[in-house]
Length: 192
Ligand SMILES: [Zn+2]
Ligand SMILES: [Zn+2]
Ligand SMILES: [Zn+2]
Image (cartoon, rainbow, N blue to C red; front, side, top):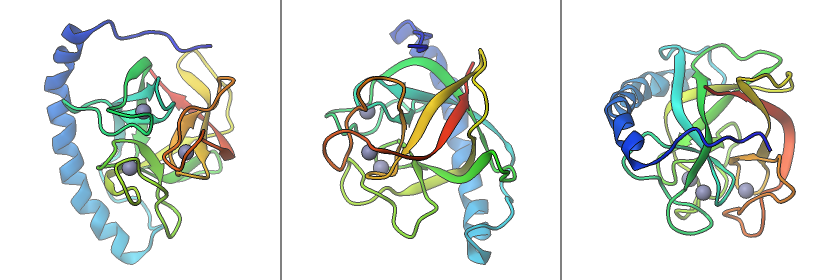
């Protein structure tokens, strides 16, 4: 279904950890800038360092997009930690919103999922309570064509607010119970 196993095991995972530490430091640095931007308006022009962050992965247990760059893999609504499969997504952050790219997608520091932070409430986190944003403000492309380095059928779950893969016959496991439920844009996310 388009997901390839681009990661072969624990040894290559360890090889990623050096880069992961750098990514973590970047998250902390940009979190401060994000706080300043948030004082003016939730839709303020981006002020964080623009860039792309790798190590975003599909969880084969819950179908959510989660950050795989830390030694642990967060909290999965299907139980235990998330489990990566397939592509390594490289996601743009802190760039301008356009008619085909939506701002306010954030990393949840409690469950490690990508969730939509643009509503007054923050959905349902599998770690308990609502999701909790940290770091970059991701601006994710939607409603554009699929290419060899861009996968369509990533959707917003209106129940838990997570980004999940909608390209299978079933829709994974939602922190609100049952499966995720798609609403809105069809995201086409870049990967290596
Ligand atoms: Zn999961
Ligand atoms: Zn969460
Ligand atoms: Zn959900």
